[in-house]
Image 1 (tube, rainbow, N blue to C red):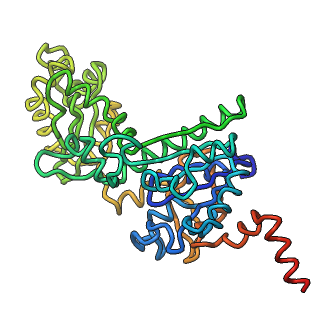
Image 2: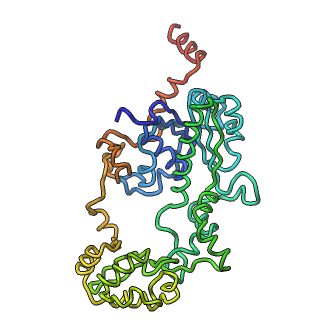
Amino acid sequence: MSDLPLQGITVVALEQAVAAPVATCRLADAGARIIKLERESGDFARTYDTAANGQSAYFAWANRGKESLTVDIKNPADVELIKRICSKADAFIQNLSVGAAARVGLGSDSLREAFPHLITCDISGYGETGSYRDMKAYDLLIQAESGLVSISGPPGEYGRIGVSLVDISTGLTAALAINEAIVARSRTGEGRAIKLSLFDVIADWMSVPLLQHEEKGVGPERVGLAHPSITPYGGFVSNDGVTIVISVQNDREWKAFTEQVLERPELTNDPLYATNPVRMERRPEVDGLVRQFFGERSKDELVAILKNARIAFGVVNDMPTFAKHPHLRRTRFESETGPIDMPAYPDAEREIENGAVRIPRLGEHSDAIREEFRTETESSNETTIVDS
């Protein structure tokens, strides 16, 4: 597309793994130029797996549409190159360990002092102060530290959330913050600092269970596919073994559910069942009624009944079923190992043409970028060598 909202915006990304790459991927999807700085061995997410036509699924998903420049940030000449790029860029994002960028001269404070227009975004595990400042922080570790795993899944052994929720939510938060800073700079002309941590982002997402804990003295129990605060809201199994998740969120839906699904109209206004708070007090009994009803009917029967009553529901799909879902849109991205089909950009109005966006090979754009940002001295030296 030729009219993307961030066309003309350049972002320098000293990034690795998932959180920062997700942020810059969203900016690239919106038209920004992303210059991804990689060590000679590459972003280590390149070797997580080989699921994407021989490449890492993580890397392919989070790095489409970027330019790859290999650098050695311990080499002063490469640091000066990065600074020259930043002087003409709009934003700089990094997710190295706390203090690592500053130690080589790429700290956000010094970059903004040199280039007041620059927006900087630093992503850390637990923030830049405090006793956890220097702790390594990966997605699952933050899921554990934030209490997320303690409220997720069924009773029994703990389990991780099935995707890198902490990294992804932090990346999306960073992309939003950078967009906000771009809008603010259009009024003030000044860049700004953005400081995000994985822990802070997921702590914000944990506000509801935290408040519930502080009111009641205990956190929400792990209830599997059930909802911790609403019933009936959860997974129930049909007589042919399919789990269907239903949601009855208000008294109007309870009326439709009792009268058109369960065919038990006497339950609609029964003071023991009429409102969600009293249903929650009798949850085993309420869920038992639903469980029995579902267990006597097939998936197809239940789907027809629920649709007719306009009760919200969803079938629990496995990956083979999801891969064939009628609403799964895909886009084909090009790469050094061939095309990779991935879920399409979420905004259906912004369709990316198949094959129009490429996943960069390591260092694919190094020569071109170094040529673009070389100094006048370097250019004159080369001319002298050629002339001689």
